[in-house]
Length: 85
Length: 205
Image (cartoon, rainbow over all chains, first blue to last red; front, side, top):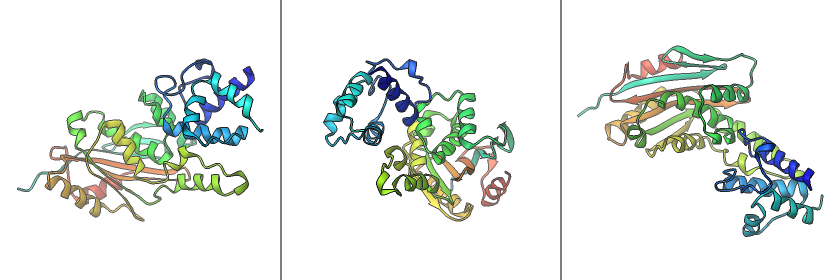
């Protein structure tokens, strides 16, 4: 699970162009949206594409995404339980 | 009554060099890619606007040129500012990136963050958000810089009191070849406003 969390942090930094962040700057329970990493609605769409592309998880309900993207901890748990690749 | 028009300042960004009013402001190694060049400029000018790194190349180019020209302009003058830009390549540089992401039906993952930049006037939006600009805007696509069209458009906006300040110019990016030429028009300014002068300073680069 720790390897997955690190992989997610690296992917998020790279794919969302978070130039000012390193993996060490993101705690597992940091809030990703709003006051946390400051991600926006386009970032949320980008994360949905990332789930599909990298882990074979298709999200269709936006409300589901809101809960899944709460933090790295929540996201990693969801991916571990639902991934198809 | 006919209103005065002048140019407060103008700038070029080309070949990893930024010049303002004909003088070099900064220059970087010629072998740097635009991504590397723009990142160095961002850090050197301590811009502190993380959204910059999410922009496409065209928006980054327009953003940097506007940063140079608007740094001493008051919030009041910015609020009603109009922006009239033009280029040759539209958003082609980003359009091609989007096309690459959707070419393969077996590997079809279009990026929302790329797709939102597949229009050239998004660059105007980025400048407007950064500086809280709420005036009129237009983005024209033509083969070469049309100083007549842009100057007539700007003149009409000032004459009809739509705006007191107009940010005008040419911002073109494709395949790591780029050129930004921007100038700020207002009633007061150090440079005489005329189509001849605009053509002259466009060709200064």
